[in-house]
Length: 173
Image: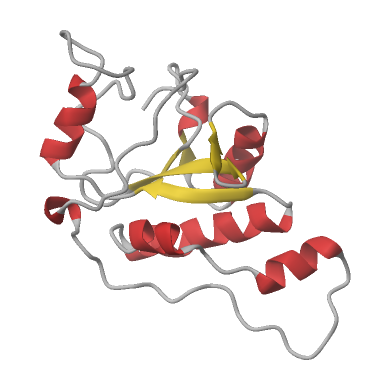
C-alpha cells in the first residue's frame, strides 16, 4: 500500500482463503495490581485491550509480530490514539487483487506497489488511525506510530522511497 489521499481500507482478512492462523502469542499486557496509575496515559495503557478486528488480524500473523503489534497498539492507546490492525496475513491471490486495483482499467485507487508483500506469510501488518468509527488516512499520528514501531524493532513503511505509513513488518531474518 502507498500513502494516498482518499485511500480505501484494505481487506479485513475475512475471506476463507486468508484465514491462516498462527499459534496465538500471549498478550504482553498484564493486569495492573491494586495500585493507582501515576498519569492519565498510564491509566489508558493499564485498561487497554485490543479491539476484536485487531485481534482477528493479529491472529493471522507470526507470533512475534502478534506480540509487537499488541504492544504498538497499547503504547499508541497510552498516547490517546486509537489505531486498529486493519490487515495482517494475505494470500498471493489477495495481494494480486490489491495490486490490480486502480491499474489497467480496474476500479479503485492504487493501494500497493508490489505483488511480493511481507503480508504474504504473516510478516506484516497495516494499522489505521480511527476518529470514532471513521478511518483517518492522513495524520501526523502515523509518524508517532512509526517512531514507536521502530523502537520496538519493527520496520516502518513510512521510511521507504514510496512511503507506506500504515505498514509495519518484521525485519529480514
